[in-house]
Length: 416
Image 1 (cartoon, rainbow, N blue to C red):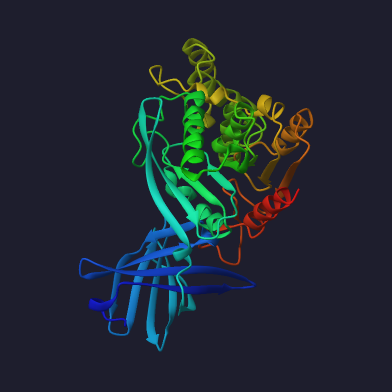
Image 2: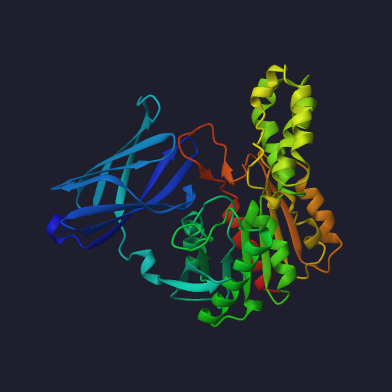
């Protein structure tokens, strides 16, 4: 059953135990090109079918590596009946030092959970561009749709695959897609305005509604960070949409969030005595990037602080840098216009968005016609909804409250 030549596809589940916490994961083994390929999935770690490195399956031994930015995870197993027993070794990528070893095992899944999810890739047109997305269709659909809006930087749909898989397993029909200029989608996200990016989301939503046969009223939108700030805009432009979920959304402009992030990263090096002047200098840099001030104003401020040691921590753009008007975008005016149910979640250990953002957003929603909204904060949770766990710092683990909170809220608004 496990011989290389006979292996077609098998799925296994495992659990890593540390302190009072656990991490669940799945490994799919697939035979292809005369070799075994392993794919790693863990909703706890926001990972879906990550290709493993150096996979070997010989006789009764299975080994593979999963590599992140900072750590390398070496999994070694010995087959025992219908399961594999072994260990996980965690190494530092920087020093190659072995940091810890954990006993773990893999249990054969009788039925692969993903058999119940049909994934189909599509291409659709938006603003003259061909964009690529995936429809996740559960076997037992509840006739509700969930759409993932795109987020910042050059991230493609893979960043939302784990959540798409999670909600499809709950019966939601899901759609996510590659932002223009990422993955398999045409275009250039860097030169696009926020309104153009939102137009892509709206076109993708209408395409999703058509191919799923779900009306917009049965579909909700979900986004995080820059995606979160787009949620109220999209809800206000498509009042027929069912609901919105905004994660780690700034209570002001994206510029204010970038400035807050810079401050949190550099305040210890700069010192609080110099923080106001340094912050003013960095704010000017971002304002020039956003097209709000002339370069002469930035140069004058730089000249005034040219002898300051803290200047080395400030990013000052060149004169010919491409402008980014998206920095001036705020979702706050659109939160005041929504009519649909909306869920807002902020992590209290978020170093990007200003700490009072959730309060500012809640005040804005109170002025809207939405009567079913919830603003929630999560302790010890970062901008990306990861949980800061000192017991096991080697993985970025989603807050254990995060996805259950979202699914419970969705169940609640479905029942009303």
